[in-house]
Length: 320
Image 1 (spheres, rainbow, N blue to C red):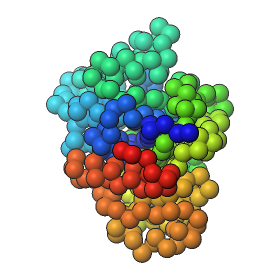
Image 2 (cartoon, rainbow, N blue to C red):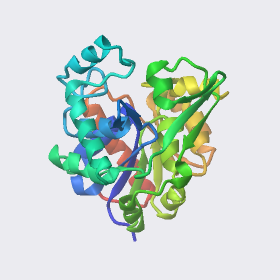
Image 3 (cartoon, one colour):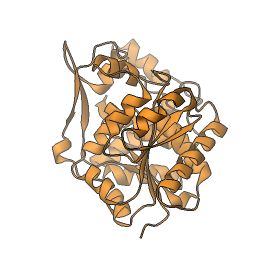
């Protein structure tokens, strides 16, 4: 028998937006968030965890809503000083943001796990929802291009997603172990598993590539629903549509359905893509057509409610 907890897989800004909506639509004890750590990397000796930090800042109401990343009210004295002495300046680290990275790196160097540090920071910022990195072992998403392999942040930030993508590798994934708290939650049979509207190749795929995790997700018995990150043939944020085209795939919600076929039970697509619903249903999954563009908090809460309600119907009816 399932309990009433909901597990959300999140990566990037789109994922954090839906997580915020879920945090308002559900009691804190109902929600767990699994974050992608394939984006994590070391910079100036500091451990940076972009996707996890985006969720932390979003749920603590510290996120810069205009930029979509980092802290609000940020200053950039550190970066200005770094440029003055000839240091790399392709990845911006704000003065306030530095505190999180310095504390995390110090705790990791003293033997704490990434999960423990994330929980410590979340508690300090008043976040009641568990934020669970997919694993404590380092995993690095690498982007294959005709000019060679690039670390993800080099591709994404330094090169501004300009190189053509030919494939992806997740270095260290064979040594990764699923976050113990995620394993425990899955053994308790969550009611629903939601894949946020995140890039399927570099935000969701690393999570699912953690050994045995995708198998455990399916064996949990919970319906798995995804929200398409592609709307009207475009990604609302990030390079997902560009990647799909370069990999020889049409950039469409239907292709997202094909990508997740055999793993998810249902897909939420935008009203703009409503004509694709029959073709998606023909793939053997349920379809929910809803407004998926999240311009403000109300949009995020509405999409969260629609997604949970959709999943509830697939699971035979869980109560929100």
